[in-house]
Amino acid sequence: MYTGQTEQPCCLCGDPETAMRIDIPPRAVPLLKNSEPIAWRDIEGEVSLHFCRSDWDLVADLVLEMGMSPLSRCNVARASFVLREDFEALLNDTREEPDQRPLEAEMRVDAEEKLARYGADQTVSERDAVEARIVLWAFEELEPQEPIE
Image (cartoon, rainbow, N blue to C red; front, top):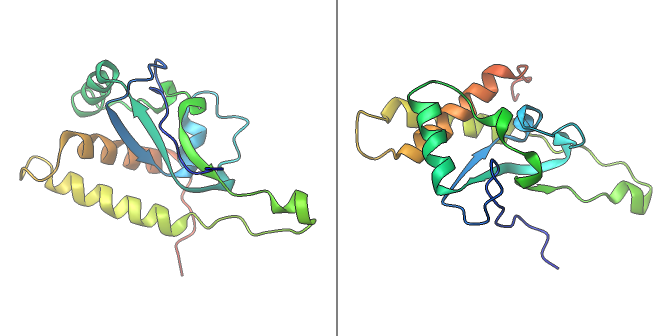
């Protein structure tokens, strides 16, 4: 049985033919549409959002030209992520929540580096710039988390 991430339909329109994917931190899940029942603290690794070609063009324009985040329109039911296994129910044992701080720190540094290079050289793609801006906007919108010691 495969329990990892799978290819998902477009998070905006549901089209099964997707052209682009971006990754956001688990803590950004509450910013997505219909996210109330999702326990983001139980997500291991990043959350992937997939977009069809026509919606990707719209998202790129929204982010790069208009400075708007598409996250509130993305349906979390169409996102791809891995939930930690529920051993508490099986073993009557309590496990620690996954520590998201290292992943968030890595995603923040990566996004800042990509945005610093975007436009200055040709090594940063439009997709990378869109993902970087969305990730940084999500961090700005969310409460700060304790730094890693």
